[in-house]
Length: 288
Length: 233
Image (cartoon, rainbow over all chains, first blue to last red; front, side):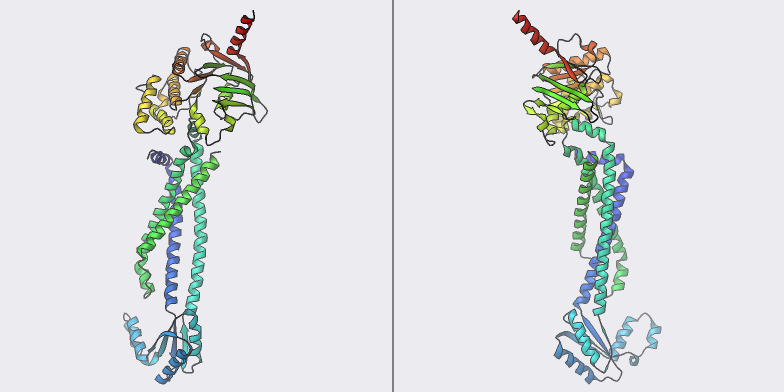
């Protein structure tokens, strides 16, 4: 407790340096948290698409029910599928009406005739999508085939890109935080050189002298982690209604509590590590 | 208890602070190290607590060669051998009580034991009632007493005093020497460095005289030598 009050005294004596260190670590952990949320969200989204591998074949207007049944039989004989659903022109209109219920103008202009009938096939695995699509495309009554392989591939690339960017930016900011704390603690350590020399002559151990600086470094980084994480979480809560509206069926939010807790715990651990490492380097480097 | 065996300290620029200095100080002795400014007294004291590395020879304290003491064990040496400096080295932003408490905290004492021990030290050094003063509010003599109280916190076996009367008038200087004598009588070995030969001329104490980094006179050796001569006659 006494050591802690010594640390707080150090911090009060140089308030702007302390603020600079906390500000830097807050920005770092805000960015780390934002990227963590984005990567976790993108992973969940990818999981959603991967768990629902679907191919849709849109039929020509002249296609009969027997053509649909023949296509179903062809697919089932070649690949084991999860399920398949026929959507007639009337069903398609109903879906269209539902999706555009708030825009009567759009509803007035559309009739069942202009909407194509379709067959939605859910595969067991993403890898089957191409084979199913191939069978569909060979059918002469099929106008167009749409499947999620491209969506998943694009999403995978995006997730990888976001992850690499996040890791690079976070590493850069962590390094910046580390050096900021090293410089600030180093300056304080140098400013107290005479006092430290007296403590050493009185028989103080290395840890007795360096302990308050290590605690100070950890207070900076942990405060930054709490503030940065808190800000990013508040931002997430603020944006939640918009994100839910955008994602519609994909339920990413609210983020489960255990995920929030694990992320927060990991960031606190990382903060402790940054604070301890920076202060140990500072006191060793400037204490020579 | 303390043995200097041909100790030489040479700085990087080739200047020698001490050259082949040898002497031994026994337990509970009170020794005065005399010499003009720059004679090597402070270097000698700094070498004892490993604040200054020696170039040649060895310093042995209670049988231990201090050059073999590791950095980890250095604090233990510095608790056993305390040094008080001419510039006091008090922490100016802390009260007298806090300055003394710091030294007690360093050795691992806590709470009421610190308060009790601090009161004993304040009593011994005649500073009772001044515990809440800051060093700037004290006279030179009082500041030196605080430095002595703080140095005694670890109950050292040896107390090195580097020019403890250097900045003080004769009367205050004598009161500090009297305090050191009291501490010596209580069982602590005292080594006091001074350039003020006039102040200590009447003291019946062992003297080591250093000049230009060399030990030029040891009164105990002289006394021993004179006794031997008398016996021969």
